[in-house]
Length: 73
Image: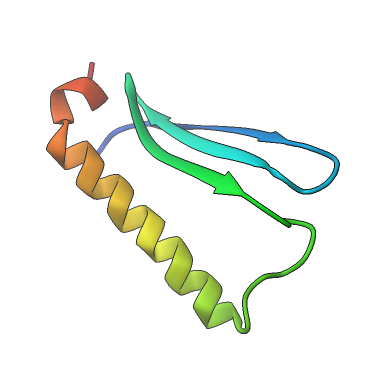
């Protein structure tokens, strides 16, 4: 909502809990995250989970603003 760019999620996971999560906006890879041990909850509190999620949102917004023509292609 902050950028007006439609984001498409893509995720590939193995049965062992490892994989990759990619968020794509237009022709831009906005977020590219390696995932490990997703079958266990790796955060001490829900607040830490929200904090980590907000970091990825902020990084994605920054990436879209930096390469706006690619994201809005």
